[in-house]
Length: 481
Image (cartoon, rainbow, N blue to C red; front, side):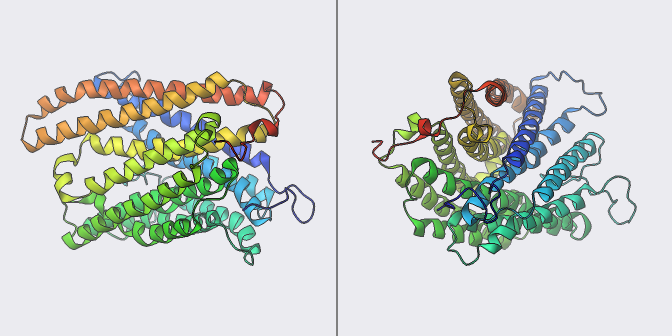
């Protein structure tokens, strides 16, 4: 599955661990900003906001932008880029295009994040969900009143594509493992999806057409970049850690092509019961339900791969993160298959149900998978054993329990809210009903924050004071069960 050597043809190291560490570190900083901002934002729902509502830059609305965008573009993009630097050279046998280009990409992306934060805090954001990154131009004019961050993101995406597609192209005569299928598709889709969602609705498509395109962007950002990267990592690291091949190559290929066929057209389900034509909404509903079939094949493939190695859930923390994330992914997509129907939308539209769903997919699935990779990779990058096994355990359980509490709490709150709203209850009664659920949400946020700080401290101390790394200690025997 992977290249048999850790050296490139010209004798240089195949993998640049410096770039991996840099992106993981930057991603951890962004995740910390995101989680702190999200916790502060949650406090306003219970009548308390420590930064003050009259603070020009640090209002709750600005905290919400930091929370969502730093999770997506700061944490996930940095995390996935770090893993690409490890996986792509090992699967192709070729280094990435240029280490210097890698340094430029890293610096440019962190600059983009800094400029984005400045734009969010100074009211320069776009009115596009998950696409609030500033464009720099006023719509309808060529007047630039701040840095065009959106265009810089596209340039950065192109550089990333070139960096990783070159080694993939060099290995074109090999039989590609399915991970490279996912990575190739995710890289190609990335720039196209971002351009579609951040340029067309604001500049070219007003009204319902712009809303439909925005819905496609919201959905495709997750389905055509985050999902291929996440599944690609799972297909690489799970067999590697378990030391056995994936159960069914055929299922992995079916999952890939079904994702490519069904996922791109499902985004309109974000705007059901709207002026968008019913036949377009029905098409989105149908393809979204079909995605559940795709997810089922992938989940079955991974659990059949684990069959006979169940003890790995106890002995390998990375496997534990991967498979809990896979269960959360199945729950998320099963929930999605129901909630996108018109029947469900009449109840849960504009309620906390949707918020809980979004948190489970972003933090309970893809963040779990990234934590799983970091669990396995960080000691190898630092050449040191984990500093504290206790902190590893606290990190896993605080996140697992905290995310589950938040998800079920917001799901129940959304249902109660939806039925009260359907029955035309007074808005003040709905708010009073929701407040206990919002306290629980804030409490679960504290659990997740504490778990994150446990992980960050453990990573820092591992790099600084951990014992020398020993590969044999992490070997899972073939007859584990």
